[in-house]
Image 1 (cartoon, rainbow, N blue to C red):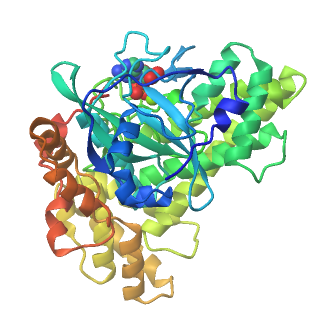
Image 2: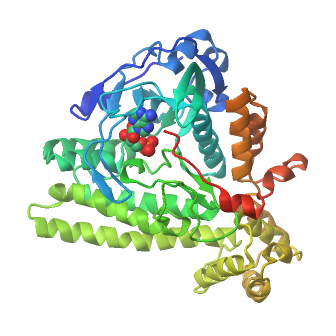
Image 3: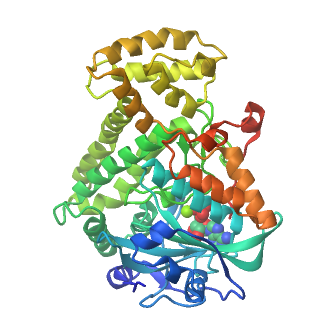
Length: 485
Ligand code: AMP
Ligand code: MG
């Protein structure tokens, strides 16, 4: 059992409205994240009890809960929207987990709020299971992320292009403070509230910083975001909607909508049906993160200095430095993925050379990286670069020469490579199959099997081969993801 606290409600008045979930007639538990429940101090027996199904559906309130819809604004595909907010989500409160961390408990799909605009406040089962699966996969890949605690089916229809089964996801996050939360206040010129929010954010996510040093908040977030994006790039993750309202100040990956993992390496890869110009394609993610950081920096200007010119100077420097932080974080990821522990001048070029070879060879991003472990043991997989293996042929001896300067035995390097390069990522066709089975027939078996396989992404098990294969190229070329709203 846990009791919720409500520090957001207490300290950030004016940044939310109180709200209630819409009543669900016959909610049933579809998915419970047992290990996450335990992290939060909730016993599995308890979490599957009828009481908790009522809590997870929003029909009853977890003790201590003061549910709110959070206000935020955001730049969506580059355009500023001064008011978005939780249109179908409710922050129930915060739990202090077993490790002593404060974490938000939020319902998604719980019904209309003051911020719903023309939306119905609902969510469909497929997209909620998708968020659950993607978050879990990212967690096991070692990437900071929000996570699904439970999914309940509401038993009610949700009207989209077709009629879909409705669901509510319970989401656990370090917090739900977004760049858009700051933008909401900045747009209203509410400096007092901005300061309260900045203080709260620093307290909650950057306690090491000195109080009132808002420039340090900008720097710290910049570094955290640089690390996050570098990690995304390392596994081929494409978020799909990097709007400023989907960027969390905690540095966690948040709001899994049309996200997907890249298959063959191509920096222009984009799957989201609404991203027609490829603004959020794989290769643009670092630049977009910096653009988003600039929007965040703008909101902080009144807090940085008395006169605007000084403030702009300070902020600009931090935004420019993002590139330095990102480059450093990316290089650290790449070194690890190449099996390098020492640092040499040419390492970035070596990584880029490998990516070029992948591009020319139309290699599967995940498998090509994974195959480096075998290559370190003398069995390179040239077949992965079949479309044009010449660049790979030229690159391999350069990398081998570089490895020889590592002064670690080949088996050691291979073992390290197998810990750095996942064997499994959520393959798009398997995710779709699993969601289709769950949503159309209520058959959760494919979903559970996929989830189970993705819980140990760095291990090659006897039965995991089929989860590792990419979809046929034609299928990937046609693959489109939807926001699921
Ligand atoms: P998203 O694309 O999920 O990041 O959502 C963007 C904005 O639209 C947020 O303010 C959401 O709360 C809102 N929204 C998304 N779907 C719905 C829905 N079905 N009903 C009401 N609001 C929604
Ligand atoms: Mg969002």
